[in-house]
Amino acid sequence: MEIILAITYRKLTEEDLDAFISMRIVQLREEGATEDIDLVPALRDYYHRHLSDGTFVSWLALDGDKIIGTSGMSFVEKPPYFGCPSGKLGLLSSMFTDPDYRRKGIAIELLGRVIKEARDYGCGAVQITASDMGTKLYSAYGFVFNGNFMQYNL
Image (tube, rainbow, N blue to C red):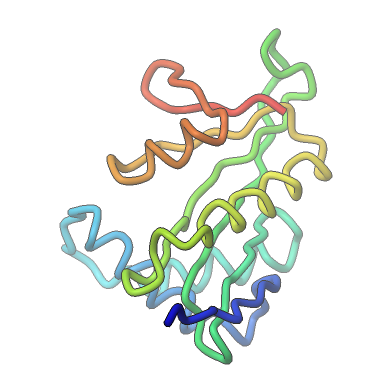
């Protein structure tokens, strides 16, 4: 008997920050980051400021009330260049799915939602420094390698 997941999606709010930050720390550990400081205060400050001014957006995947997947998009602006005449870039981060929920289409759904946010913001491209695990997802979506990062042109 196959279990049908009733996954719902919604945007991150201030009330979600503790759980979101905990998942970000788990993600960084999984990617092999060295923990030499308490990153929680810096993350809390960053997300609070950038959620407030609209330069960070995140979509969450939930199973009931439990956050089981995260995504994040920071919006930055650089001087315009030929590959991105608006100069506005989306920096993808915080793509994480609880290991018990992987390979069920959650990450691709979250990715599509934050890509739409970047398009709506006026970004000309989205960039990510991808983990080995994430490379397949991003390549399948249409990101291409561009030097040290992957890029998806909008």
